[in-house]
Length: 129
Image (cartoon, rainbow, N blue to C red; front, side, top):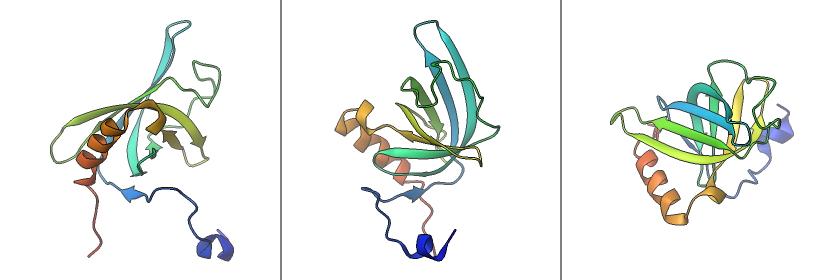
């Protein structure tokens, strides 16, 4: 990271929140041929429009839709204290070399669904002391 990157203002539309201990199951599917892959990881952070997940293993080279920017993604998050599961749909937007995946979900849900999801997750945000 350069000094410019450290001091540059964040251009994201929504702030990110860090959540620790949230387990994520990701299923990427291709409805055309009923193929799918399942991945596991942990949530790194989230915002009103997307989520970043650190995968337990590297992202496979060949995804079912034949495209890393698949829009047939289902994510099941297990919240740590309640054990409650939240399911969201989205599209992969970023994959980095540290096996982190950025998923965009706000276009796949109604606003009130995203509000309810954020409300449930925000209970688990780590607040610095």
